[in-house]
Length: 314
Length: 312
Image (cartoon, rainbow over all chains, first blue to last red; front, side, top):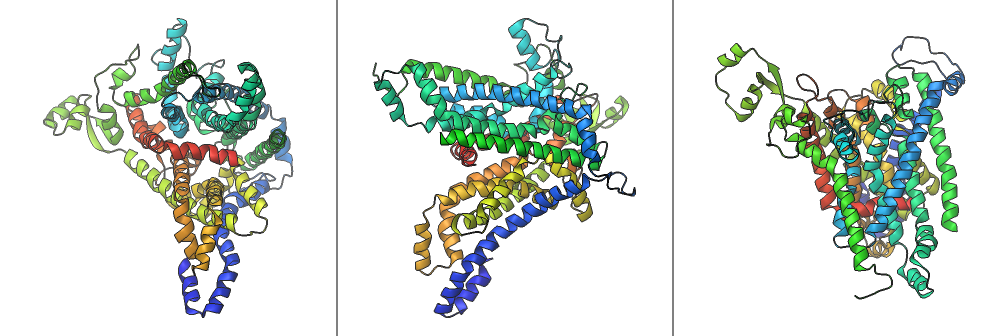
């Protein structure tokens, strides 16, 4: 890319070259930004608009020859009155609430402990971070092996701790346990993320504040509640935001673990959407579903970011 | 014992260290189990109680890379003695190797698509981030927010129109299609991270270069790029890890030619059910590069995670 510009600049007399250089800043800016904007328009915005269009039709990908009819908001009405939608939203809410609670509790505790700066803490931090770097689909698939009744390592471990028969329960086969099976694996995988963000928060607190508190004879307990937690709170809230968005989109890990089963107990919205779009091929209906999900994430995230900014400004 | 106000006492350090190490060991068990299972025989893999000590075997790896078929004992006897060590392993089960499995191809696809999309998203991300950082781009904040918001879409939702679009354009199940898709997904992260890194480079360096007669381009790649090298490298690792691990788009948009390893590994089956040692072997080979990467490059990676998240 630089060649033609350089040649032009080299071939022109100094004054003009200077002018081109001065002018070209704007050209360069556009030249540099355009490919990114173009690619995002083509792969994100155009598809989004197309999805909105499709959501107003009865189009089915597996019947391309059927006449495509405009059905207005019929798809949206169907989705919002479909009990399956609400069931999957409920499953998603359960998954979100528990994964975020557990990850925040464990992640913050770990960050707090690591911040005590014991020897070689950075190596152990790295080892703890390993699970979140790996492919959720591949790891999730292997967890089904750990969850096998009798022979699975997880069942053996639980049996060892509680004395129960390792063959007596199946984490991914039982309606009561399956929602917890996915929560456990997600927590195992993503607690390190919350931990890292919290660690950044704890490390951003200047030691002088603690020194001042110590001079004022504030107890450690009091220091934790009045200094550590409030100052780390914006970071903690940020970690919650990211985990919230990511887990609302959750697909790969859960599809490999339970496939949405047994029945529909772990059928999160992404899995429900995938069924409608790529198994039942109800493209119009699924598009409306996608729009609803996107609006939901976007809306919730915006409200949350407002709250976050308030906390930050405080 | 020395006492400092802000420095935790030695006892606190011991307790904190002990708890963190205990958690680390617990959390690494599943990963250790994947690696161990890859070296077990199928019988050892499903033994009860789970076997911690076992005689290592390469059966899982042989089964991962080969396709085999069962032959009658007479045919097997007629074949003569096995010529290689892997033949020997397979023949214990009354089978012969009929060819290579698809694992190698899928792994190669992951490499091509991973590195291709990483290169593109870092290249485009760097120049866009430079422009956002240094020039007055109209509607800059809106554009940056737009770039970020593209990450909030559930992949399945994006996949519906992409699926239709790619079918029209002939991009389904092609390397190019997947590279472009992953590039687009990674670009938002790449622009945001790199803008942060480039913002940190003092603008005076370039101004000095410009006064010395460098053109903008020369100033960009002779002054800014070397300064941003570490930032570019850690961004590249993040893009690579995303593309390497991605599953949702891969499973929906590829089926053969361009299929990557994550949708393929779970489909590995053996004779009579799931061949867990082969699955574990495939997973080990696929996950190990990332584990090694993470440990070797921990400083940049960990900084990048918090940096990227906290900036947003």
